[in-house]
Length: 155
Image (tube, rainbow, N blue to C red):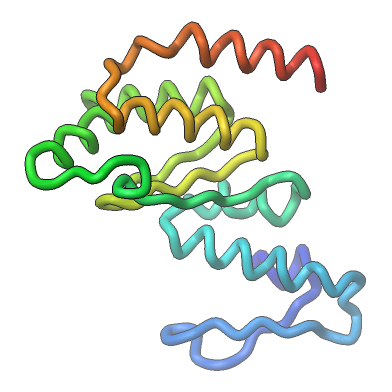
């Protein structure tokens, strides 16, 4: 299990029902426990193991979650269309947002989970929110690209 090798943590209990994380005597940093909890949480949300492992290695990665109803109250076919706009044909729109913002996105029914750095999550979330509100998929692409290039110059 990656948690033992990378973070010097032990696990206990029946892992089929619950995961118990605890520090060992040779654990170098107690904050590793929180990183491992974030890893397990990201995996349970649906992220790939490799993507969730990035939470263990990098300090500036976060998981942000929100629901479609937090952006706009939609019901029935309108909700289905909004989810379709988020995914795009064959997942193209979702992959385009992921690649341009260097994030990972999980769309689980009406819940959306984004894994990435703080600024990249903000850009991805803004793009997803504009799609939920009804804008076509390619409309805010110029805005997103200019915001990302501006942030790369600053940082």
